[in-house]
Length: 134
Image (cartoon, rainbow, N blue to C red):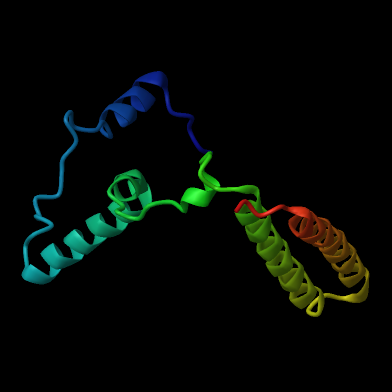
């Protein structure tokens, strides 16, 4: 018949499994060999790339397209011409995308493409009505 442990036996058992303070660490350096150092550097670069993208964005030398800024230098004709091209591109992308879809989803994408085309027609009509300054 098994004997239940008494409180003193349980207490002694718990004390024998205490962790050192501070915990023991592995004495092996990550730079033990040139390969491990290169691996560590590559891992750091990968982590920085994904976890610190703001520094790369802020360091970018590319300038945003000025047309998309609030710039009074662009006249109505330029803005309408750009809007027409953008809507035409969106319409073409939707038609190409719709061709890859199953019937119920294809009809939805084609309906959206038609709405975009109607917007393009309206912008083109407005562009036709713009008076060019002499």
